[in-house]
Length: 116
Image (cartoon, rainbow, N blue to C red; front, side, top):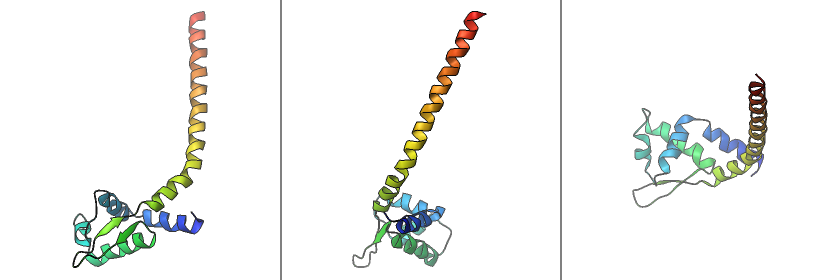
């Protein structure tokens, strides 16, 4: 994934309304009206959020007669996960070192208690 694509995806995910919309779409396709129900905002405002998500490739808007379903497109999320994997390894290694250090301290403490 290119840095520009990452920036667009992260920008789309930066808004809590858009994250809530994506979470709602996990359950399946929904119309704009269905997606707007939990929010106290106008349909045009929801449509703007949907356009941002669509530009980022996170949703696809279809057309089936009068029904205009929105569908989650998780590809960009998988790309972000791949990008984050590098950092996940860093944190896992850091936590492993911390765990080793804590174990070492506990061992020293037990030895110290035995000497008393």
